[in-house]
Image (tube, rainbow over all chains, first blue to last red; front, side):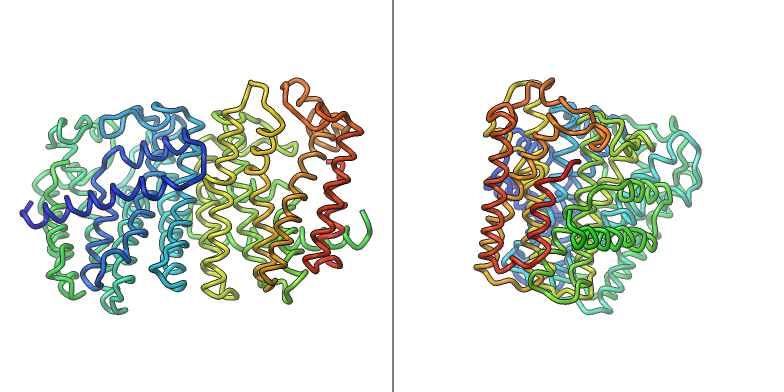
Length: 294
Length: 294
């Protein structure tokens, strides 16, 4: 990772993480439920989605404060989805990023409600932001709700559950991934640019960019599951093999998968050029995501 | 119930129930998850919140179409909360309104996701309504999110879980009820009136009205748990006694509780008069809720 990008990520990661407490502090609510919401918000994470949203905003817009509450709301939606996905009835995970999952740290009822609370509160945060016009708020809420709802992220998690314990095709897997992760990543990029007042044509090229970025993400996930370092990943490798999951390396071989990823990265960067965002942090972030080791 | 009110409720209940399918039909999503959402939406219910919202709108506004999508969104939020409250980790209920609860009919993972989907989609419905201005949408979303989130309904469910299996005071019980039910009822009334362009002063009187209506609801619930007909209620009576729950009848006696309810009804109607809504359906609805037998 180049020094500038590293600084960029560190700066905005800290900015985002400082805001969680600010947004929850003044909520008049039970302290334990608040603690549970904060626990998962503050449990680490790459902050990929809010950083993408900010970078996409900065490619076109000015003062970063304008995009901040939306970036926080987006991370809250992502966090709620992790809490619910980890539940015993879903993926039944005890650990996330090396820490007990929310229902392990608290209990199942609290985890369900903390997730519900984060989702609901994220829309309230946007609706209350004094820096946004009513039209901007409505557009943001439309994009966030649509990409995280039944035709987006929630739908993807349902497909994922439904496909468990049976071999699935690469096509099916891509569809699951596009809904579970891709939709929210796309919204991060498009809503940031929308707030920055990108043109309609620029937004179209960014849609292409987001599409390839999503694919890069998935290929690299698959590659890391074969070649990754368990310590850096914070999870065991080889689980895809155990699961009989269809993956890029299985279908194309490791070298083929790496080559595929490089093709996607070229296409992503080409789209960024066309979107007039070639000198933005989005360019470096593409390499960063393509070469990440965790 | 007088004939006009009965007609009124029947008409709007049908109108609301006809809309669920319309709103879900065009969603591009997995059919089983959609089925699960529709199952709970169509499992009956008094449709109290949307009918209150419509009646409150009609006290001030014209064409009822303007409030319809918000009323549907409100009922979706209420329905999601029932699905999640019924889960094994929460109230662990197998039956609701005489039918299997969502997680019994489908499974736990599906029920969690159907709830998440309904909550998320409700905000999207409002954001997409072509009959509302951006300002109206933002106000609606603010009110709905705030009353159903961590400082509202979700917070109330958390308090309720937390208070389980220990005796609680009437004050605590009222707080739980105010959050779990009262907040959304208040939003139904205030947001309906807001869309109908009620004045600030009228909204203040309606806030008082909503407060007493919430109390009426709770007292009548407590009374029915002592004197109600199990068949009409669709649930066993006497459960409050078994639970060592603090209730109005226990604290005031049955006669005292009935008297208290009548006092609340007078105050509710007085507030309605002041809000200029004395000739609206809200007046009859107050009596209806006060004397309901289920």
